[in-house]
Image (cartoon, rainbow, N blue to C red):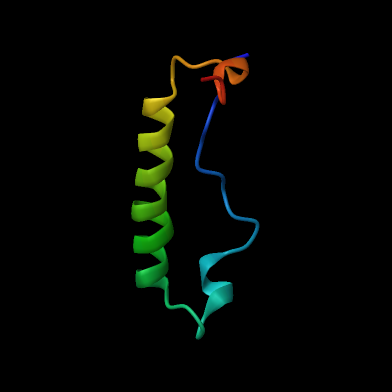
Length: 56
């Protein structure tokens, strides 16, 4: 079984977080930084099966 990572859509709208988290920092943190982490990890493990993770 291959591992498939993706950036999930959040179960709420960005504007629901105002005024605690403004939209611009949220877009940067989730839309850019978190997406980059998910994409990078996905590229690193793209040819790895789930069974092979954790094996020495």
